[in-house]
Image 1 (cartoon, helix red, strand yellow):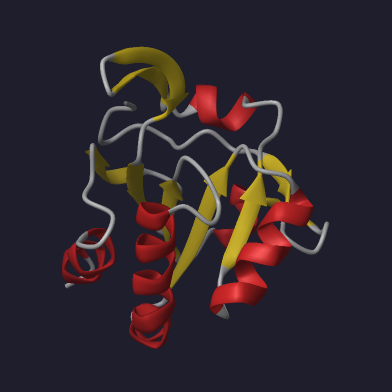
Image 2 (spheres, rainbow, N blue to C red):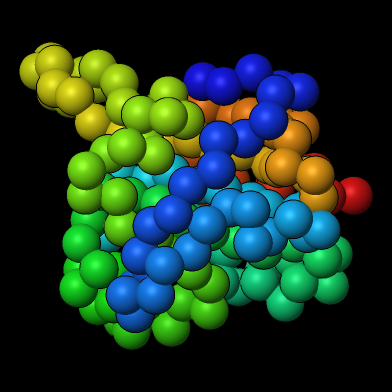
Length: 151
């Protein structure tokens, strides 16, 4: 996990509509950057729907929500449409940003060890500095926690 107080690595990735986004275009806003394992899975759907439900409140606090996984643009589009997600989902099929943010980790699932995205959320301030980093987050609780972090 990246250290609090460090500059968040910039990136450019395609969203669910194929449009490229870079972190630097959000300077001046707080960014909730959350990494999740897989579209359409139970935990990831709960987390995304939680962010969607609270999205108007995040906007009131001058914050944007961005989700990143290694799923494809097409998968993200289906995920967005199924749940009516109002925020940006970025596709990192090459895992370059996932690795830059140190969230590609060994995971144990039913006793089997595999590599995957560790559910992690970063809060990045208006100047691109990481001010909060949470790993092993609980999917259902994370959106509310991040809203309270904004004050």
